[in-house]
Length: 597
Image (cartoon, rainbow, N blue to C red):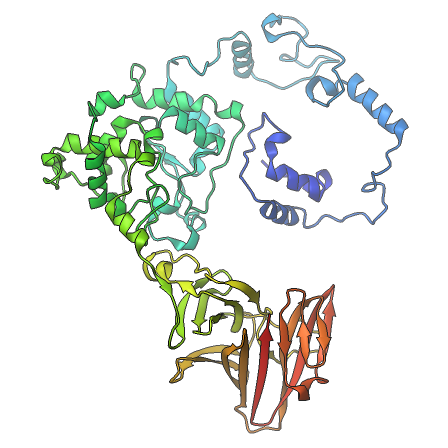
C-alpha cells in the first residue's frame, strides 16, 4: 500500500512512536511491530519525512502548549455528535449512538450499510461474497480457535498470505526469500553456517515440528532462538495470529491427528539422562551451545529448552534422518540407515539412545554439561604480556575489524585502527582474551579485560586540510592515505607506517608511566621546498588548553613539545573543538606527544 503524503500526516515524533509500537495506535491492524530500536525508528522517520518542511518556532502548528479552551470544547462536541466516537476510542468520550449487536441485525433491511448507497448511512462498496462473509461471522458461523475446521490447510494459507509471511518463509514450495533479496539477510559477524543461519526457517510441516504453545510465543515476539540472525521476526496483533498455532497443528498432523507424548515416542526414560549427556558429548556439542555454554567457534541454536519447543515425535524422526525433514540442512545424521555409530553407549540401541538424548535435554537445567564443554570452560586464553609486548590482530568495538592490539608488560595497552589509520583506544590493567580471535568462526569483538579506558580523537593524525575551517578528514574517504603495515623492532614494539600524500609517517607508541608516549617521524618524499602538515592534537567537547597541554571532558590530557605551545589553531563547531598543530617539515621531522588520563 502506498504511503501517501506522510509529511502532511505525521510529525517526526508521532511517526517515530508509531514505528516503535504500531499496535498502540492500531491494535486491530495488520501493521506488525518490527521490534525496532529507538535509533532505528528515528532513522527511518528522518528518511521518510526527509522532504518535510518544519514550521518556524512559535507557529500555531507546533506551539500547542496553550490550547484555546473554546476550541477544545467545540472539538469534543463535534467528535461525539458527528459519530467519530462511534468507531474511534478516546478516553472520556462516549459514542452518541450505541450500535446493535451484530447478531440482532436485520440483514435484509431496506436501509443498511452493506447494500446500495443510502443517504445518511456509510457505504462500503462490498460485493456479495464479502457481504456473505460478514453475515456468517456476525451470526457466529466463523472460525473458532479451538474448533476442528473442514480445511485447515486452506485457512493456514489464507493467514500466511494475509500477513505476508511468505515474503520471508517458505511453505510447500511457495514463498521464501528470492535470489535478489538474499543479500539483505545476513548474520552478525558474518557467521558461516549457511542459509540456516541467515534465512528465516521454512514453515513446511512446521505444525508437525513445533508445539502450539511455542508457536504462539514466536508470534508474540518471545521465541527468538537465533541471536546470530540480523533479521527480526515481526510481531503481529494478537487477534491476527491467535488462530495460527492451532491451524498449523491441524493442517500438518491431520484432522484426526494429535500431539505425540514422550511416553508414546520414547517409552520409559528412567535413568537415561547420563547416557544422553555422553551422547551429546560425542557430536552435538560440536555445533550447538547448551545453556549458553559452548565450545570455541560454536554458533548453532542452543539446545536448552528444546523439549518445550519441539514435539517428541519430530525430535525422534529428525535425529534419524535430518535431510528428510529439512532439505539442505547442515545437520548430519548420527544414525545412518537407522543404526547407531556408537556401540559403547546403551549397547548401540538406536531407540534408547535417542530417548536418552531427549531425557538429558529435557532435564538440562539440573544436569552437568557435557565433558568437552566443561573442559573448554576451564581453559584460559588470556594474553599476559611479561617480557615483551604482545601484538594481536583482531576485531574490537573501539578499533573496528582491522584492529591491531598491542599489550605491554607495564600494563598500559592500546589498539590501532589500521583501516582508519589512527590509534583508537587505550586502557590499563589486563590485556585481552584471545579465545574468540583464535577459535570462534565469526570472531566476536575482543573486549579489553582491564579498565580505565580512553578513546583517542576520531580522524587521521596528520592531514592537509583545504581550508582552516574545513572538517578534519576521516578515512576511508581521505585521498592520499595508505596504510603500509607495521614493523617490529628487537624489543617487540611495532612502528605503524602509512602515507599522507607525499609524506611517509612512522608512528611508534610506548608506555610512559600510566600513560603513553607517541613518537611520530614525518618524512617528505619530494625534493621540493619545506611544507607543513596539520597534526590533530586533540578533539572533543569542553576542550581546555593550558600551555602545551590540552584536556577534554573525559580527562584525557595531550601534551606536545613546549616549542609548539603557541603554534596551531583551535577550530570550534557547535560545542565541539579541535586543537590542530602546524608541523613544518624540511625533509624529516620528529614529534613526540604524551597521553595521560
